[in-house]
Length: 195
Length: 347
Image 1 (cartoon, rainbow over the protein chains, first blue to last red):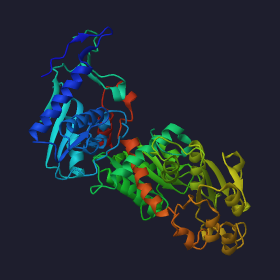
Image 2 (image 1 turned 45 degrees about the vertical axis):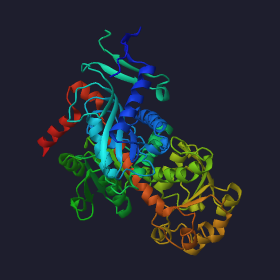
Image 3 (image 1 turned 180 degrees about the vertical axis):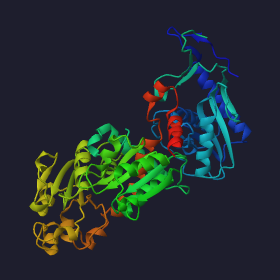
């Protein structure tokens, strides 16, 4: 596991992973994916918007760098799970994102779901439902940049960037250059104290 | 957004939001499995006081594709034909636990009354009231126009974009048309330039306050303005020439067709990219010729498919989220829980 520096930020949130640690974690996950699946054939990376998608794109680029035969762009798709969530009634209406599968589809493929934070597992449950409406992959695996625990469903990641034990009231924020202008994983404590 | 009663209630951002959601809904409708679990456990009532098979089927399809339970309530053959009031019908629906009521009524303003009376807690969606509004029709028209003309011209994804710079001609019976009223407001909100074309007898009083131009000459509009989209309105024959004194709006159908019908000749006056629209059902040979209706530019059948996607979007936006966060915070209970308990009490 990558041992990231735990540095309190001036304003309160604690930096758990910085840009170099995120790069290393993704590179390691890419190698693990290739090792477990004995190469990159039949792989599809489905990023869960918003931040799972840029992570899937980055992973695909690393896979293609290691396995010269792979076309990074053809590996990646996005999977919006909003319409499959079971908590829609308890939140304000969410905007629906795009679902775009690679041209090859997902039938018979090994689908790797990519998300930024793994928490209750409900997003992944929704994603599994969404996938079963789209086709029948040979296997579905799960990659998460951060696993913060507190699972409410029997779901377990196959690839983890960093295991991050947290308490329920803390907030984990993943920032990515593509969406937020910087790469960082932060923990915020609403009560003010840094970890 | 709590109800959808009129396109006048939609600002530019809300309208674009609905169109973008509809685009995502449309994308799910090309899949093998079209059904989504999104509104499971929710009940949508189609309350139709006026016959409209297409609109009802479109709403029913949309609700079912989102896994909602659908109850169709038609006034004909129901207690309404025995004299039950809108209020009592509404209270019955409330007792049955309707989360949304889709209402079509011959009286302008009936959906507004239903939404603001407190008789039902659910969302009210106007599916056409009298000569007033038909907002989902206007939204599906705007969606169709955007899909064909905005993406094409800009060469980019139409998502998030309005209809600025597009010219739309709406032709025919504007006087009786809720489609025309809804469309003028929505298309204007989205930045399009609208011209109404109709015989003087079919132009409503007060049209000068509408945000559009009015012309009595179709050929002139086609030649000079070169509209990007032309929307033909349905002419109801029985409304037009029968009825005796004051009932006739033009001498005979042939004269109407000569002045305001879309035929092959007028089709050639349009620019090459222009699309032909019609809310259906069409009177072939009256307001639109078979040539025009079947031409490659006609998007009339596609409008029907887009109608399902747009209605899915509206149902999603009205029903999926928590509609009463403020009240929930005050009462300390989840709003759906409160509603369920009340409903059990009434039932």
